[in-house]
Length: 354
Image (cartoon, one colour):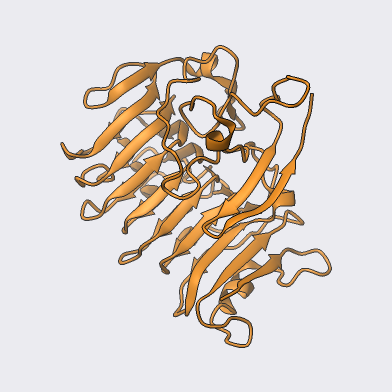
């Protein structure tokens, strides 16, 4: 069993110019042996203007679609490898294979009415991690419901910024839309400005059926500047704990309140910076989740909360960043990367900006 990593981008020397071409080779036995792990490393040579489907019969242990460490986003739009479909054809990313990880990508809906990320039925060990998921839906498409994340299998969603998604005046917005027959595991995500086009006659849901399974968990999340429902249904046995919001939420334990202006570095609706800023009430008010599910301890900047020994913050960004030898704290716009997976420590790089 080997990890077979391939580069994806339009620059000279890349293995593939499109994600679709990489995916189509995943069943090629001249490239992959039985139970290999396949890794597609995307570069920001140019935007990937395609709809991505991971859909085949693969004899692989694990599939990872990610950004190369050198071109990971910094938590803001356009700062790293980007998937931005040019046409609203189904989902931007459609996963039909178990043991699949989508990570470190800027997934941009391009305001053209497209849907976001879908995990189909019957899958296990699937993850959406450390991504930006934004600009799905369109106010000009007045009647088509919008699914930002659609989960039909037990899936893990950790350390993502999910923002600026909308539906038209005669449509509903589903940020997380799940089957109530499967559990969803939602940890340390930040949700900001997810709105329906006409909030007097239509509904916007952060969670639709996502929390209506007794095994579902939603912890350490921030939800601000949205309309108009946290959820449609929730199971009494689902674990909803340690949330950040503008006010108390019935059915959720340990809610910390704050305003978006006090919480975030940048509060633009079209191009926000959702890193926590000095004075945010969300700093130090989360629960330590350890290292389960896989990589939950790695924040949106690549910081390892667990090894740094800090008190966890709500949302995807850990404000209390590692301390440099000078004793200075790394600024919120700085990236500190610790990359690892199930096979252990793989690579380490730091970028300091004082």
